[in-house]
Image (cartoon, rainbow, N blue to C red; front, side, top):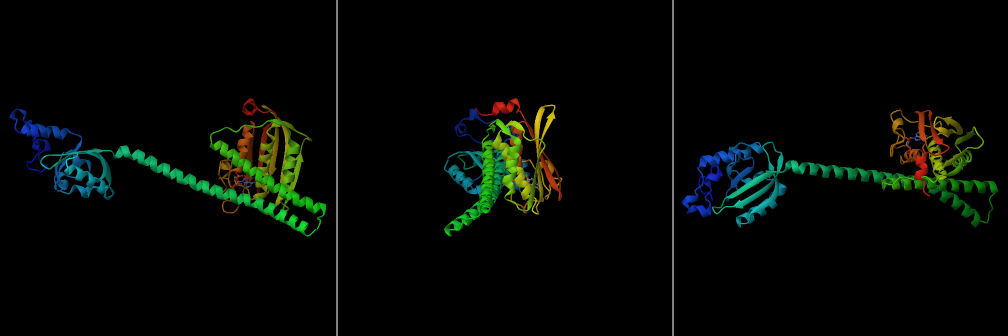
Length: 404
Ligand code: ADP
């Protein structure tokens, strides 16, 4: 191979003497000018490097591709342009080349004039004269989307992890409260028992009601979590439909909450004595329990919590209107459109009140599962009213979803 002037001004191909053509005058290479023309057309990044590792010849495209002039690269040590992190692998490949082993697919980053790096894949062969002929392919664009995808995937994963950690902390915090109530009440009863003291039936009833309400709250929370994990795994929640009396159901939910808060005054109004509907009783109870818990939580100074049950007629048939109204902190206007989104919490409650941001999204899903709707009206500092509209007869889709 080439031993002629390694100036880089002449194309390397003109310097190449193929071993089997050295003594064979018949197989002479074409004139240098033809090669020069040919090489100038080549869009590949061709170069030749000497034993000392310096650029000795460059195809015109090579310096251009990295923003250099030919003079800026010629005789410069090749390795100084390689990203420091890729130098060890590159040196190892050069070593093998010096032992006669070609390089196929070595990847490294090459520094451009502006300081940025291009990712290159190299094919190189040693020549008998001790030069290395190398062809580089710019694979920056190929690597970039992949690298970007990897980076954005990593970012998504860490955001999801942070959300999950925050969520777990929030759930633990929320579970602590009813657990503390249960522990405190049972300890109190155990102490009374140990002392041989009997409690007046009214006091005993209150203790048990506290325990019941706390356990019921934990049940709602765990059911919300279970539903969330069913959704997470890509499954559709199905209602367990049965004839249910909604007035009694709503009254029961109110009385469970009444015992836990002495600060609040609960008012229950039903426009009809009974209201039969075909619904998933446990889930409708959960919706009300969620709304009542929020009404209590977000009215830290107490006030009235009003629950009403109405029957109404609509173009789509008969339905029930269940509403829960409080005089609490209310919801900022900016947050109103988002309160039914998963994990969304109002700006006025974050850092002030514990919560997971899961209750309302779960409530909406449960209501929609019945073909119903849930809406809210609220004014910050004045209070909120949530209204659940449930068809008394479920739509065909809900019946289809309902397990046997
Ligand atoms: P959590 O109460 O656990 O934060 P929810 O999904 O039940 O989650 O509620 C979402 C958000 O809606 C709450 O964080 C709060 O900002 C707002 N919110 C819900 N109910 C009320 C209410 N009765 N009064 C004021 N804000 C409420």
